[in-house]
Length: 281
Image (cartoon, rainbow, N blue to C red):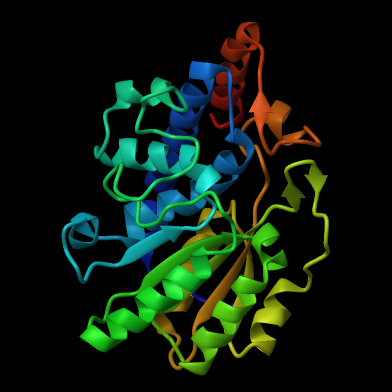
């Protein structure tokens, strides 16, 4: 990928970096509420969500009542902690509600549920469904004459689900060039490293008839370039393999071998919050 960013995008990098840091702060607030949560993956996805919501999506795309808006489907419902952070940063939900994450009766559930909070496009939880849902949405947009893109995030773990590859095959067969799939390749599953190897991810999508590239998913410049690349391509669906670091931004979480579901003792949270500020100063 050899794309020169416009100066306006380069100038936006400090603001996006600040947004990503705010998202990480919001995630720490959430996990601190019950002392646990899917913090590792959320921290890894913060940079992507900062670029998606504070650069790629315009005001009209954030009007969730519009039928022709750009849409984002989060297939990994347990990454909800990252979505609540982004929606709080956007002002869709109240900042002081974040500490209710995962609590009984709170709409900020540990896995996303469509219809409970504005901006959540699909119910997560059962993995392997996101690409199929997004493929159907992309076909619907084409049928209705909408030109907006459908973005979907899936995980490398979901590449072990046959339904993902059925959707990939369908999207390529119908040449859905309004579909962009972001694959979060963080290399972990619930109990540690990936159970079944899925590499080479980009080459496999290309073999299915997609355009595909690979980037560092925690590099804001590469994320901006990837969004620009996706907008320029025509004739095929696009896959962008994001290599992300679970726990990105807080070393003590990055260094865990099991960062899928994180529990932290009550007396450690001040240190966690302090580390986030020091490491991102």
